[in-house]
Length: 259
Ligand SMILES: [Zn+2]
Image (cartoon, rainbow, N blue to C red):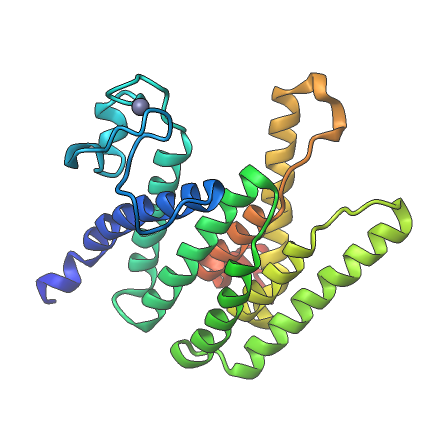
């Protein structure tokens, strides 16, 4: 084994952490309307420009003890969480797929999903500027870079988005309020294309299961707010798709050993 291949998961982890910092910039600048390129990284409150050691993923947050060096404003927990999620995603993908086209494709779509998920957590929207390019990338990438055929991928997108569209209409008929956002339907175009029609049931099961677990945890912590807690579904759909990509076949075998 060449050294590059042997150390690839570690290289991937480092790259994932650095990309996580970049995703943080994208999320922050999308939420605030600032340009992606300029100005250089700075504290959102006092605008103090960050020096190099304040820009190291995870490490800086610990060195700074979660506060801006200049004005002591607490730094959002979103920063280390996004960096950690991005690093772990890159590492697990590297272990599962090794260095190759699939790793590259899933890194790119994973980056989009991480950015979208944390915007959704904050603002309850899944912007079209991410969902539509994401769907095109997922569809073309899956057809060209994985074992899945373009037919599997297209069917996944159509069935996934179609099922969520029906669910949205049905919920509205019964309850008279929007339960599912239109952004979730657009996201399903991307995720369905990514996991293919074969991967959809497990993906949706994982999304629903993790969303339910998170809702119960959130309600237990905020019991005074009752049942009207609003939880975005986009991040959990994304998590379901990411788990399906990493461990779908293994999970299927565990849940249905005879299938
Ligand atoms: Zn500051």
